[in-house]
Amino acid sequence: MPFVNTKEILEDANQRGYGVAAFNINDLEFFMAIFEAGVEERSPIIIETSEGALKYAGLGNPLRGARFFYELVRNYAESVDIPISLHLDHGKKFEYIMAAIKSGYTSVMIDASHLPFEQNVEETKKIVDIAHAVGVSVEAELGRLMGVEDNVSVSEKDAILVNPDEAEEFVARTKVDFLAPAIGTSHGAFKFKGEAKLDFERLKKVKEKTGIPLVLHGASSVPQELVELANNYGAEIEGTKGVPFEVLKEAVKYGINKVNTDTDLRMAFMAYLRKTLSEKKTEFDPRKYFKEPMDAVKEVVKERMRVLGSSGKA
Ligand code: TD3
Ligand code: ZN
Image 1 (cartoon, protein in one colour):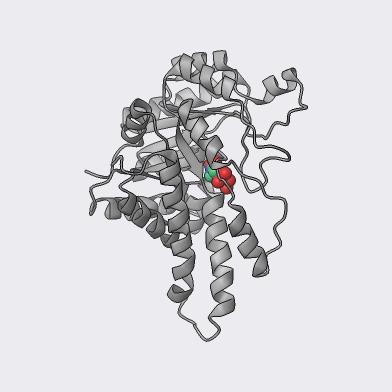
Image 2: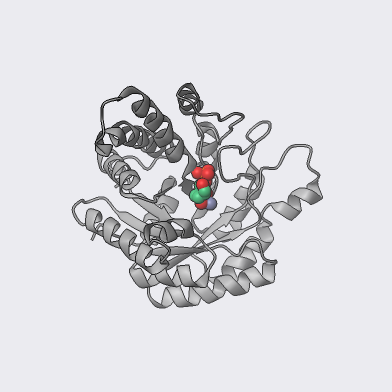
């Protein structure tokens, strides 16, 4: 039972007004860290994998990759009583989306946000029809993922960020289950040049007009202490900026329920891997090197569960 549909997790979050982070994995180590964090926090867990992850774990064969992640997540989920779901992140290729659905993923994202509105509707609807026929829920995206600075004109902003009227029409026509509205975030560790500002007025309107669970992409906070630690052990990463916790909390208040997080986990793992590699000079068991990085990932995950309000909800 605890391997559940992502829709179940997000509808509860929508009703009770909290956020659930969706964490990206590519391997066993990140998964174990997230799993332990969720169990200890009593938080629902959404695991997501990108097309790149399917390719990576499947050694170039997406169906093999998708089956691997499904078996992994379902197997762990069965032994605990918190809800856990598995989602395909940024599905773009039909082959990958079908691989996820065929393997047992409980939700998929169809990302046709780079296409004009009508084509985005068409592509999204095609996937929704297939996925819903077999009980899989669907996420889609409107607008482009880009940081928007204050000096950008209103018309330029309109061209990049979500249009709330379009969002209403999009949801009605496609029957999509969750929507990712572009409100000024971007992927990676360099999200903003100046202040981290999101367009909450747009977000509020999208929520009013659709009512469905909304998704924030590019939501990593990029903790400064992790970047500093990495740099102290030889990394060269400058000028990072993420979404601060207070801004995430506000986003949840205005209707965000799924909070995509990848960069923060990568940063934690990489910083602590650099540390242990430089400290344990005689060790050659990889599990010993992974211990501290996994603990660091687990801490980041727990902190996010508390910030978003999913702790104690399972
Ligand atoms: O869809 N994702 C995860 C994959 C992005 C590549 O890192 C997100 O929206 C999370 O973005 P981020 O970079 O803020 O963790
Ligand atoms: Zn994303």
